[in-house]
Image (cartoon, rainbow, N blue to C red):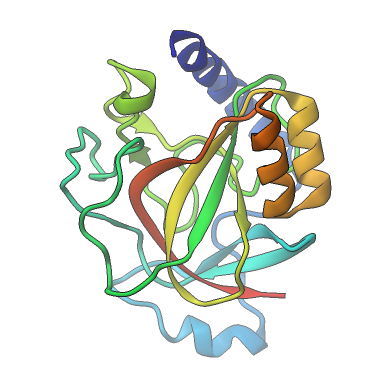
Length: 210
């Protein structure tokens, strides 16, 4: 676990520096006319914006119009109230909630295809997260790491976050080329260069567009 924490810290620094060179769109984007109705539905003062995502071998656009949701328990030392490494106990709504898999590179140099390339800065994501259950003391209020998104459904609304760390560049390149959850599961089964699914109490709210 100490080695994983060290990899995480080093990778975070490299990805932040590389973020200024990436061409991947992130943060608040101008909305096309066909997206105007979505923009009119911003809730609770949340920003309107997009990131990219990977779905079934394709690049899709994720549209955000509502802020993230993190409730305690589980306990969190982060300003956001969000925690990694514990199952959520309070949900933003009833019923089944789909999962968005947050792919975090834990190697350097940083890959160029990050959907949220800047640490702690991504539209309607928390800026910080308590990582102590995974990375230990000193990560109680860590910046949300740079990452990409994989989904296996095309729906709108709340999404539960599960994090998957990637420690090998070749493994990341395979995921980025395939752009689907099936490939991630095959790589996890092989058990090299990738972690299992790590739960969190973080939920994001977005819709999926082609």
